[in-house]
Length: 131
Image (cartoon, rainbow, N blue to C red; front, side, top):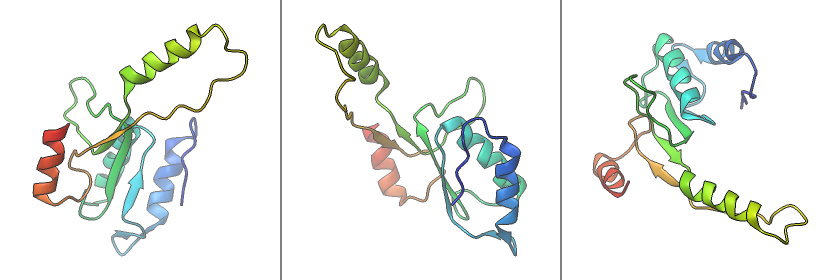
């Protein structure tokens, strides 16, 4: 397992991918990215390494952005509930009796299919209708 730390040069991760490429195949079949933007960078690198997504390697992002301006890109991702997160933060900040750090708050996330993970075609359509 390789973790790309925030601020770490992306070239180190590219080297990691190249080091795990044997006979045209990676030694693993999935990559979880902490943001959809990082997933985009990883996909570009994998394509340069002649890897098919999602057939050879599945990619999933984690923030739900999925679109970057005018770039033609969508990925499978875990969508965070941004409006609810913002609302909860404001609510916690406005509490008068907040003397200690706030309690753990868990908000539900959802999965959004975007073509970078293997899916049954019918299941993928059902997921897209729900989102």
